[in-house]
Image (tube, rainbow, N blue to C red; front, side):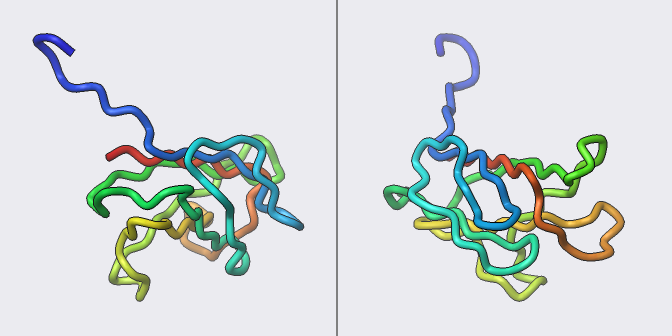
Length: 112
């Protein structure tokens, strides 16, 4: 944009049901979701990103619609690889750190 900050549209986004059989409700730039276990998913990009230097944002919702889970993303301290150009690992965790849960809704967006 002229005279202001640049425009950085989402390179990939997804909204999916994380309970039972994982099902994508809507997406852009995401080819599939891999269920790695309770509250643990991998979002696979349709095309590899040019760089792994991107930001990820998201939200996760419990079956009780009045409560949210923490949308968490990989960190080396958790023993997971850093951001990758072909996919990103997603976690739905309790906000008190007491574990993970399969969310009824998980929404994720990637900006580079």
